[in-house]
Length: 220
Image (cartoon, rainbow, N blue to C red; front, side):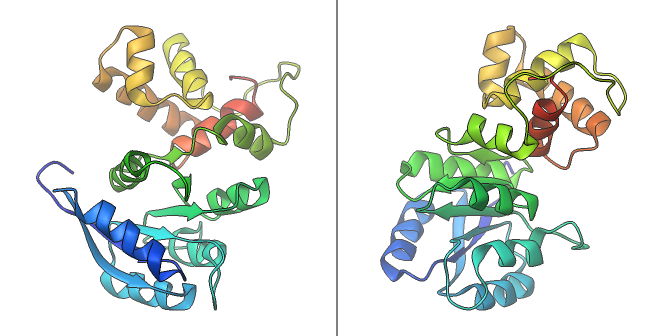
């Protein structure tokens, strides 16, 4: 997104939170809040009309809730999906799982730092994903529906190279691309290349699905 402005739509039924989000995001030179709504039904309509780069949605809203709004904007059946980040007070497995299954590419808690909120929006804008660190590993295990360890089984996809396996395993543990690059002593572009190749082989839409498949198939 270098040289471009990330256009953001906010949806939350609490006006004070919307004002706080707007202040945080608009303070960044590369982010602009282009719309805000107080309910999910209006959020879906405005998002379809404006097609912002990122939709920042609450879960519990009047009308259409955030999970259904996410499905309508970013779900598997959407021809031209938008990027959705969920921001919620509730750290519940079913909410996180539901949001990501419905196509969200980020999940943060409302008490997260402004820096994490900004990072989640920027990550979503470039097709990356960010989940609050407090829920990352627990979430991915929950998504796979598996215990921490499981017997090895044939992988239903093109085998990953040893280095791709290293990258996928670290992503599954919640590391960012920068942290993976530091740990493996490689460049950021190298990590992105390995992750893109892994995503293609795993048939995943984003890094969250890469991580979920890693847990599911014992790669984490």
